[in-house]
Length: 227
Image (cartoon, rainbow, N blue to C red; front, side, top):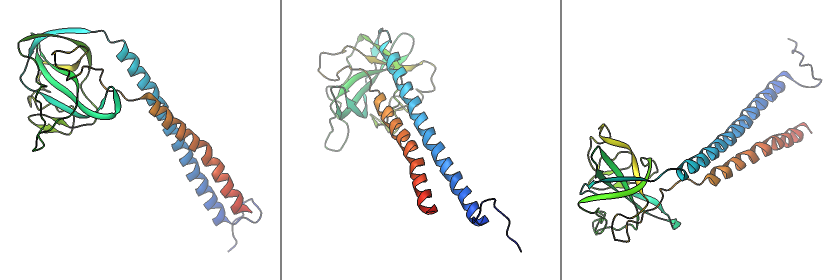
C-alpha cells in the first residue's frame, strides 16, 4: 500500500501528524498564559477600583447598645506592620432598626492556657453608645472567627446567633470604626485590610513574560529537532 503524500518532501505522514499535535498543544499553552495575564490585569484594575471606592466612603454615625458578646477574626494584618498578624475584634450593636456587626479594630492576639481566646479588656462598652465608622461588606478574608463558637469562614457569623444571616433585621454590611469606642488602647480602630493591587500587577507581568518566552523556547526546540 502506498503512503499518502504530505506535500512536504521527505516528511512522513506520522511525523506530520505529530507536528500538528505539538503545534496545537503549544497554541493551547500560549492562549492559557495570555488568559492568565489578562485575568491578573483585570484583578489589578478591580483592586484599584475597590481602593478608590473605599477612600470615597463617607463616615456614618450610629447610636445603639452593644450586645455583651465579642469575637475575633484571626490572621488579619497589623495596620501598622503588615508583616505581623492579629485580630479584628467584632461585636454586635443593637440600634433602633437593626443589629449591626461592628468591626471595632485591631488587637494583638491573646490566649488562655487552654487555647481559648482571651477577650479580657476587649469587651464592648455598656450602655447607650454613639459610634462612627464607614460601611464595608462583611468580612471575606481568610481567617478563623473565634468566639463562643468557632468557624473557618468569616461570613458565618454564627458566633452571635445562628439565625443572624437569615434575619432581615441584620444589616448586610458591617461598620468599621474610625474612632475608638473606649478609652482602652485596644482594639485600635483602623481601615479594614485590603489586598495590595501591586501583587496582581506582579502576577500579570510574570504570566506575560512566560507568554513571550514560551514561543521562543518552542522555536529553539523545533530548530534543534529539525537540524
